[in-house]
Image (cartoon, rainbow, N blue to C red):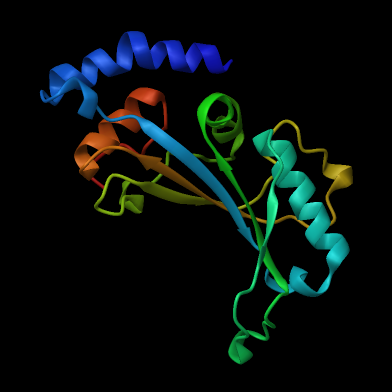
Length: 182
């Protein structure tokens, strides 16, 4: 699967970007990494639930997810220093392309009434961020093994300098965006 998207990038996407945004070939935009993160919320107090979230994200990404530990205590959020506050995984290379291919071709089309991702998730520096409401859209997740459904944040980092170039790159990769201006 990864070879398919990587080959598509080398043979179709890269030449299209070079023609559309002419500059040094070494500066052609590419996807650098994908970060999947889950904030624990009330799961901070339940180690069994935290482990279930970690296992689910590891299953979805195909790579071991790590628990994020609080560096400081924050009384307003009832967070103690050293307690787990979330789970994250950073994907690069083959795992990244596998995940992007699975996200675009299998997971997002399974979302009920899905009309595309909103285009306002770009940060001005060529990175795209969006959230998913639940993990059940991924085919690896077995409903009976889930203690509680949770959402996730996905951040796609590109080497593009601006949002227009990053948008075109992700559009060519296959990320489904909403139609129209916004």
